[in-house]
Length: 310
Image (tube, rainbow, N blue to C red; front, side, top):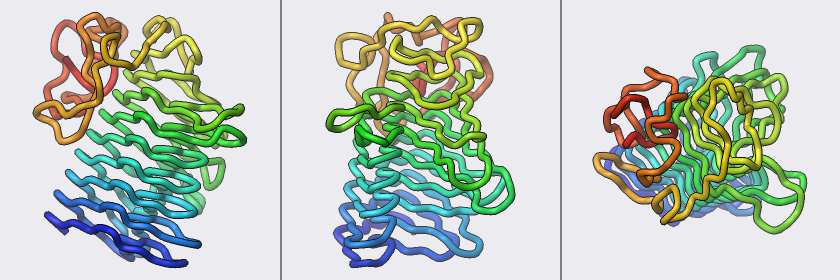
């Protein structure tokens, strides 16, 4: 599917209002907008499951879709997933507002150069991850990706950016050059895990060269080069990570407003020149040769922490 627009479709008590695919699907340069599942069902914008369910999504906007149960933007159970240069924006569901993702194979899905923005759910505002339902292990890799202004409920919930479920068999989540800013609770209460909530013991969350605003929940392990604010350590290791501190994500302080930057396809946070993430000596080299925009990385003596290289 290329150059298509799927919009304002509705399904009652049925999955996949926009697209319900039971096999391989490739989506390029398309829009999946304002589709809704009502009563029971998952995947307001997109559902993919069944034999040979490899999924490729490139340069696609998934926005304004809703489902009462799981996966407002997309509900995916893929053998393989490559989501690149795409945005999931303002989708909503009970679990996984932007995307609900079930890994089925050891290689697992890859998400890169994408943005999850303003999605809402009880748990996993941006992304809800579930381990394989059968006896195997899997690895999810997120690289050069931004999570911003995703929301989760305040009581008994978690994971404004990402929620790692305790269902399914063990899985590993690897975050490389990922930026988490302004992911929040809606309402008031004792919810935890604004960037990441990992309730999936013995699941493993490993972070490298990533920015975390807000406290994480559950076990998170640093692979080095991360920057975290003072509210939560998100696995902070003082030997290999930057010193934690205040990192306000508003214009005029450390980050510019979320916006498109050439040559990329998705919105990102550009950095002001005094940002501690720029040319940070703790940044782990050679993780990737490009940033979220597809621009070269590194520029300068050291790489930059987060999704954008300046």
